[in-house]
Length: 217
Ligand SMILES: [Zn+2]
View 1 (cartoon, protein in one colour):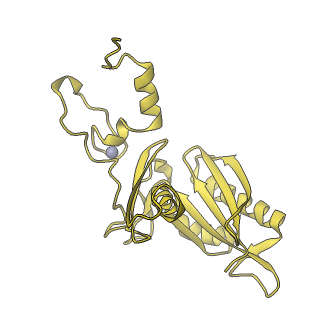
View 2 (cartoon, rainbow, N blue to C red; view 1 turned 180 degrees about the vertical axis):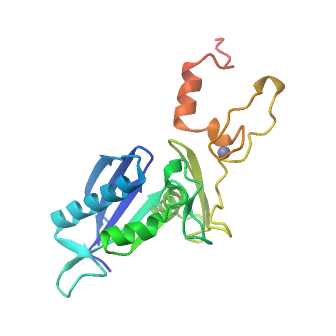
């Protein structure tokens, strides 16, 4: 087991790294803005990992020599990796789509990197020692820039055949009323996706706007 476990939350607007030691205690945490351009984002991750390894005095566990402190790296991304092509798909940070992010990170960092959908990472974490601890089946939902979810059964992420199991954000909102048309367009190509209502920016807009809420009382 590595001395440190580096975990990165690769979000649409920021990239945050957290480091756990062998005991699972948080050692450090750092956040940088996400440049929002693919090549620059790969470099931002590389630099963030390099600075953390330097501060800890650790090296990638696949490069560590005996006696050296080692670290492993996992990264959660908004999107999933296509099992057929290895390319990113379904990312709401759409500039990530169709990019070989995992391969490019391996290369840029000269280490093996585990890449997984961020909602799956979240669901697994909650299933392990969070709100879902002790339950065989856990469905975890994240609402942020977009909306994602993951399913964990018996401590394992269920990815499904297309690695999108649990992703309910691009299902249409049910029971649409006539006055709700036209429905909001989504980056995925559909209209009226759940994610177009249930995500941070849309909830904020709804709260600020006129809306259909009953304000009486
Ligand atoms: Zn959609």
